[in-house]
Each structure stands twice: as structure tokens, then as C-alpha cells.
Image (cartoon, rainbow, N blue to C red; front, side, top):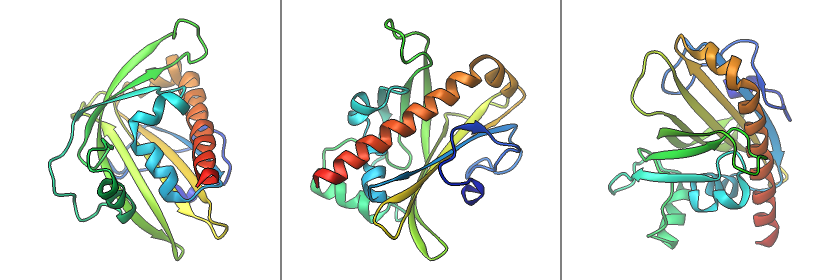
Length: 213
């Protein structure tokens, strides 16, 4: 589904919902965006999986707290790049497959008081390598904890290797359930702006890390 999102797409509501990895088809709405990042996929994924870095780059979600980490061993689907990170720093707390965590979402990130804050409980539902068109990529997805019929969502982020050593970043979040319209109406514009800030922050942090390597 990510291959249908054009390059350098500003965050927007897609014309039609995209199927997510876990919930598949049947979504009510999807936010999509993409960007070219001058950093390897592994660098981008490392930053995304490390909540300790969020305060330094993520205005939309400046805090993510791990509630429950999966016990070892790592699943066979774990990307080698992630396994290597844990080999180098065994005590590092990363968002691995099966991790349950809470995101502190700032819907008004420029407000001096912090504005509206919403805590969202999530599960890491996908963490894997993939191939597309003969090119290797890395994928992570997280979804709403539990399976509430009235409103749930799954967000997928992909980092596809480019010939120049950078990557194409693609993100899409699909909402399911009859209350999706409330999200679009009351916080839709804030979520779009938040996704844009997330993308800009991730791009800047990854490119700085890659440049310092």
C-alpha cells in the first residue's frame, strides 16, 4: 500500500483508506505522507525505535514510555540492524515487536503551556525487513492496544533504501471504526500538523546523526 504514496507527500487525508498490516481492509480514513531523508534506513529506524531520543526531535510526541517489553529471545523477523543495536547496548530500551507503550501526544506543540495532551496506549505490531522492486527496506508499525470496535488505528512507517545511501520515508495511519469522523472533525488538522512535525524532526535528527558518523 505504501507504494501508492507519491514522493515528498505533505501529510494529508488520502482519497481512500489504505489497508494496514494488522487490521487489513475496512478502514474509514488514512493519513499519508512521505519524505526523502539523507540517512540510511537503519539510522532512521534506530531513532524511531528509541523513545529516549524523542524529547530532542519530536515536538508531536516528545515522550514515549515503555509499559511492557517482550521477553527474550528476539523474534526471527527482527531486522539484523536492530539485533546489532541490542548486541552493542543490551540494556537499551527500544520499541521492539510486542512492546506495549504510551505516547504523550501534543496536539498544540507550539503552546507555551503544552496545550492539549492526549496519552495513547499502543503495541508494536510489525518490525521487519522487506523488499520492494529489488530494494531493501525497514518497516515498523504500531496499533491501538486492545481491539476497540468504535475506534482504533494502526500507523505504519517504512524506510526504503535509495541508491545514494539515503532512504525514502513513507508513513500512513489508518483509522477504523464508526467514531473516525470525530477524529477528522475535531483533531484532524492538529494530527496532520503533528505528523508533519514528526517527519521534519525525524529527517533532521537522522541526517545529523548520519553526517556525524
